[in-house]
Length: 426
Image (cartoon, rainbow, N blue to C red; front, side, top):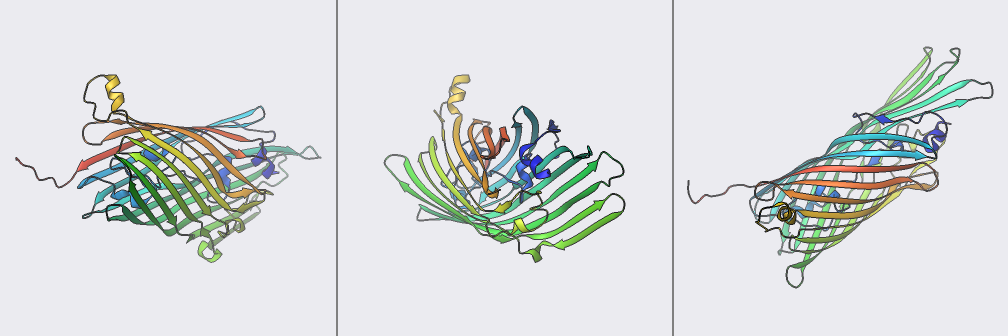
């Protein structure tokens, strides 16, 4: 019965939820490691999430480690992003509203020596956040309330290095440490005190080490036009950590079992991404990306805490995404004053995406589609700027009436400076 409540919100208490403790909120985050984060900085997200084949010396591109060599010599760059989302869940005449706000990314990059660069940072990987309740009445008019609550998520701490060869070919390697905590708790409360309340759930602490490799090749065309092809591959890795599964039946029975995740053979899926971009200097960019993730051998659907979703048939699968986006700057060198001339120095972005989940529910994928808009306003000197992004999308099962419509917004602080300058005058 709880599975029915989760997927169709049939009757009962579907109310507004606003809790800042959630990094993300979606009933579909009950599955596996939760809802996967789109990734990228505000710069990437304003263009639909593209970046595998993008090279830009004004912004940090954390989607492909090979891209960090696209920079001015002696330059130091940093990026910090904040993001929020307003989600409306709908099933028939029922509505539920939720808002979340969190830090999206912190990254910085600087050169090491000629034609090489280094990057470090942290970014979210997945979000778990849901609060679902359902009331039922049996044949004996005994009322019961089913409730399930989950929160937490995983993050990625990364360090990367890259180098450029022959002025066209760039390669990069990235080391990732994934870590986080996930809590899932369900309960059944009966209206008759003679029935025992049951509570069960899982507390998970997960971590994993993996590597990501990237490559980009630039082919100059006529004028300042450049065609760039890029690819990334992230290795599959073991999921380590520990879990605690507990069950309570009133005050009479309590059960608690701790176990190590390394003994369960769990794995994170590998990821392959390819992209092609077409640009003119740093004034115009258009890019198309495709990403495929294979979680079919992860075994998450066999372990409590990742798969305890009632009678729903949850299975790990292959996820994929298609993204297209671009940016345009009218006149970056316009030095005239006035609001109109200021807008000509701003960069405007747009994009669209289609995401297919890395799992299936009763044999069907949970799909997401959305469009994005963004812009960067120059601040002070150099390439410092404030980036703003908007996102409008929809998520849900094609076989379910429950739909999640969401409006996302993000802010990015782009910091740029020149190190080790030798001044002509003191």
